[in-house]
Length: 273
Image (cartoon, rainbow, N blue to C red; front, side, top):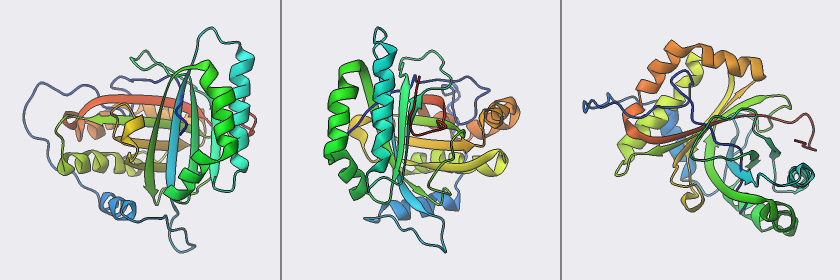
């Protein structure tokens, strides 16, 4: 399975969909649940994803982060992205994009590039991973030029259109729950994420869920994608710091680590640096 990079970004308090280190207070966090969270886990228990005209589509999210070696010729990174982007032609792929990170901040994880793809079912994701074309791209264009990689997969329920238009800006967030967290803590964090879209109308699509590939995720167990029309709308989210802080407070004490990264869907399937 691919694992790859974008420079990982850990944001400060002005960044929504990120949570700073827990406060020293030991007071319990007030429960905060959303019906959408319950529907999400009902969908995750199913063996395949339902897609119909009457209901919003449900699909598998696949995020791969890559850290390209610093001394690599830029043409090799471009070749990696172009070959990854060509995998959109595979029958099992509903949507696929690959490119460099838009914005990075210092972090213990220093990824540089990202692949995002969507599938109708977990079996379709497995078929993509095992496909000879995918294996060849990983072997010939990815592994030789990267230092590190990771991947996160989850079921998106009712997130919206499967395809994300070119030029759209994405904020991708990975959360690591505190050690020993259970179902209640997990649901509180998912509930806090689920409440973001209604408070920030600039978000055109919000996808979130629990990672089902823990072996490749460096301990991050919850992921989300917030999609915006463009970079201006994404940056407008950061300006709403007061509302962002209130939403982060709902799950702050349950989280032990956060990675946030921003990405723009390339204008064509052929990505470049």
